[in-house]
Structure formats: structure tokens, C-alpha cells
Length: 190
Image 1 (cartoon, rainbow, N blue to C red):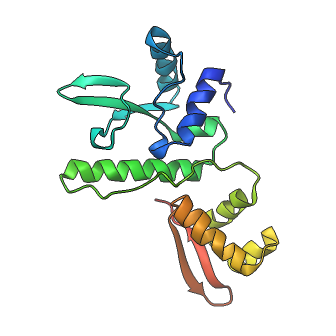
Image 2 (tube, rainbow, N blue to C red):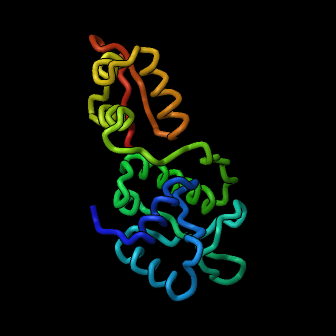
């Protein structure tokens, strides 16, 4: 894990809890030249990225670019990994933002995505992280394999997939019937 200053750690940790991993607003007391210096170093290291702000969603601005446009800062996968957040969740949130921007660029009406109930923080070593690791395998995981790993009842494992991973985290999980294994769940790489 890279060495972070307290300020960098606070910025990335707060971004992990915000919709689309937006790093704004910066911590209280960090302004002016000090803010520019911290942000420049974090962008240089690949922990933050400057993207166009969606003013219709009232995203906070990092800087104005003129003509009523501005940019905001988002934490990257590398930045979230630096504070110990699982890469699969970071990439899922990054892909949501990229998809929303692609739709906006095409001129099509933007599909409303409400990321607010989705938490992007997954501690390593938890049962949730272990289940995600099982689902990331090319062969996926059956309910029986998840039950064997966690010691949970089958309905609890299904509930974790449906409510915890699909709905809360917004992860793209596919399922299909496999002879000899039953229903197999797999995390589709987006």
C-alpha cells in the first residue's frame, strides 16, 4: 500500500463514500495553494482524476473552465486501492460514471442513476469480499460453494447476492443453470 499523508487519506476515504467517488468538497481548511498542491500530487500519482462536472446534478466544482462549465475531482481505482477499497467495486462505480458521460455525449437523454444508496467501501477479508472473489472467478460460484465458504444458509447467500451485491453495490452479476452445479453466479467484468 502506498504511503499517504493524512490529508490524502481523508480525501480518498471520503470520496469512496460519495456517489461516483467524487472527491469534492475537499476537507475543511484545505484551500488555495495548499489545495492545488495536494490535488496536483494526487493527480500526478493517478489517485484523482479531473472530469467535467455535471452541473445538472449539482456536482461540486473543483475549478471553472468558462462558459458555465467546470470540472470536479473523482477518486480513481488506484486512489481507492491506496486506501484499501476492493478494485471490483471501484471499477463498477467508475464504469457507471463513464456510461453516464457517454450517454450525455451522444445527446441522448441521460438515464437517471441514483448511486446514493450504493456504498463503495468493502473491507478486505470480510465474507462479502470473499464472495466477490468467488464470483470473479471465470467459472463463477454456486450457492453451495458460497454456503461452504461462509457457513450461511442458502437463503442468506442468495440474499447477499440479490440485495447486498446487486442492489446495494450495483455489481453486474449474471446467473445461469449449469448441469451438476445448479445455478451459478458470476460477476461480469464491465
